[in-house]
Image (cartoon, rainbow, N blue to C red):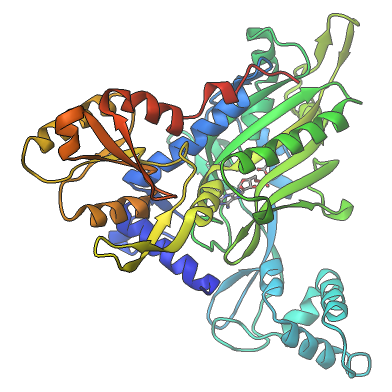
Length: 496
Ligand code: GAP
């Protein structure tokens, strides 16, 4: 199936089955904002729950939930006021706005050759290999973007030479506190959750009586006024992050960095993303963020190409030093054993909850042949979510709506509902009920049939193998809890 079709099918399934809706759809929607529906909110919650357990069920990681609005000096100290910008150009003709790097990225290899030949006919007249052209084009894009812009047509209106010069555009959303909208009352919607952790470093350390090395984890909303929102949930203006900042003694940072890289990659594997759909991207030295000494992204193979789902950074002592400088408050750690005072280094693991949501959706989507009750074959769409992530853990069906089966099925539903998300369905043939559950990724379907009336067993059908087994109805709850909730034994108390 072509990749563009997968995305179309997913977006449509998300709306039809209640995973994701366009924000304020009745008003035509709002670009870069999405609403999570009844199933989406469960999936997102399960992703966050798995992350929270993975990160905070350790003896040296504490959690916090900091405010979205922070003192505006925070963002001067962090470097966001100065550096959190994207270069942007407008088309004077149709007023479309583009992020410069993305505009250049989307120029085809053929078009790149044409532009280079036009700018320097002598040098580029012969046939060149695509990689060589790509390199030349990149060098020119970084050195003199204006020359390329003058030779390019606007992708929207097709007019040539209509681009403005590139300008810096800060991605932070501004708003005001209090009744007066002047420069003294400006605050920002946080563009990352990390700063709420840094400014609370000593509060958490002393309240929780932690010693280095230790980490602070947080899940929360972040906002970025992205110039181009695209690819469904991939780049949005409002999204959620799951971040952990690990504080350590300078000199031990490289070891901790490697440890967390390995841990974070393993987390995605443990939730069912195969190795071949994940890869590392290391930031080249010249392209590191202003605060980083080393950085790797975990990338997932989306239908539209590889895209970052989590960044792991060695942030050195940049953040705490800057907060010490801008606030005038001590941000040093006192090491009791050596009686030394120093600013710790920070290793950051920063995952997007919304981007991970999208990766888990894409990863789960499958179309397969399935047998029909009449002995034929039909196509089934099945979301093969890891059971810990599945929004609904089990569905309960009475085989027929008579002979006492609905009453038993309702009783089973009531018992299970106390512990798990359950769906009850008594309409249509059982095969059709299976298909409806497959499409939302329910791992188990329980059917009450005539044998249940005799021996209190039910059939439990597995979503992926489609095999059925008989289980005593009073064992169902334990069986499902074991198979569909994050397992405590998978999370022993850990340090590092
Ligand atoms: N504190 C570091 C930080 O924020 P980042 O690489 O800018 O680093 C971390 O963001 C993660 O947040 C990304 O890997 C991605 O999963 C998610 N993210 C960033 N911008 C996003 C956006 N506009 N929409 C959705 N997710 C985004």
